[in-house]
Amino acid sequence: DTAVSQTPKYLVTQMGNDKSIKCEQNLGHDTMYWYKQDSKKFLKIMFSYNNKELIINETVPNRFSPKSPDKAHLNLHINSLELGDSAVYFCASSQGGTMLSYEQYFGPGTRLTVT
Amino acid sequence: GEDVEQSLFLSVREGDSSVINCTYTDSSSTYLYWYKQEPGAGLQLLTYIFSNMDMKQDQRLTVLLNKKDKHLSLRIADTQTGDSAIYFCAEKIGSSYKLIFGSGTRLLVRP
Image (cartoon, rainbow over all chains, first blue to last red; front, side):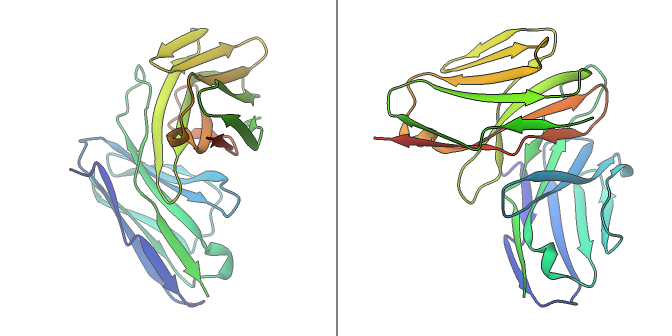
């Protein structure tokens, strides 16, 4: 019954590797997001997709590439991992529409540690 | 510009009320939100308020919005140890899909 799920929950890898984090939502929402939370708990949006179309692309290194195969999935691929990529990555989803409140529902997070 | 600020830490005694404050800079905010993050978990939406409202109450939670001063607060009545967590305020600007989050306030409830 998990609304927004992410895999893996923990990811430990070495510098220079390429890794992916997967996200799925079963809420029927049309918009999905990736956020990065640093060690000081600061949360910043990275990307957003609406109906498989990229609508938010913040200043993020192009080593990060989101992929949305369908409305229910948004994956994050990271190339050439660096120490500074260590963080917790959260996926979220919402139902769009100009008259709605865009309540975003978050997944449990993926803790990425780059050594 | 887009900036949301919160105090970093609040400590209260169990049974007291907690008030967590947030200030924001963008006057075109349409919705403002409060999220709760427990250790090792994701963010849980607690409540939100539309920008043309000045107060919203939901059980133990009361949200106050002062749009003139761009100040948002979350009051938790009868605070319990289970309320210990980090609380984030966030604003939605206009019709943008983007939420701007504050840095979070760590609430510690002492028995």
